[in-house]
Length: 86
Image (tube, rainbow, N blue to C red):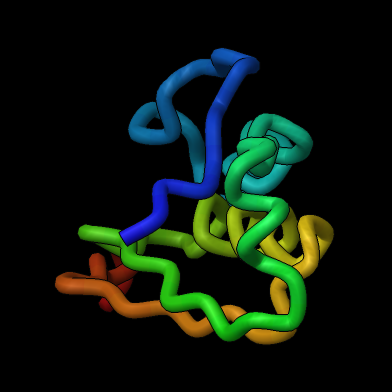
């Protein structure tokens, strides 16, 4: 297993934010670790998230991994939250 991402920029927790603000809250907060960049080039990556709510963090993580050289990023999650109106 390779822990490829760091979050050097702290932002408010996503829990308190409405869905439309979550993507903006996580934009540009993740970076690929140097040792990961060397191993990501052209590879397929499985990104694992415990709970998927809006997908904002997973989307930002996937974007960061692709920018670091990953060819494809797949998401595996253990739980999905439902919207309040479901």
